[in-house]
Length: 79
Image (cartoon, rainbow, N blue to C red):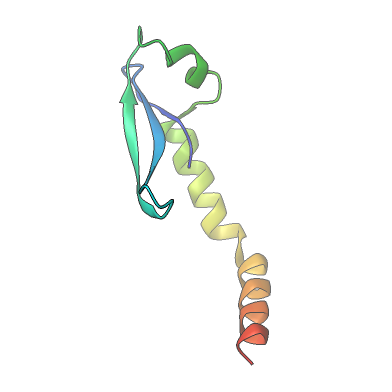
């Protein structure tokens, strides 16, 4: 998950919520606005919405070899 910088400067920061027993409850984004104490820390690693969309597009197009390798591994584990 990426820190996404919106056009108005707001950052969408990924956050994972876990229960007391450590099990994953869910993943979400929280919005961090300029002036928030954590803003500068997250800004350095943020990407624009356009950059995020391009990375996602490239991943979908370019992951065929990795997906085939994973599916072969998975099939091997199931036998």
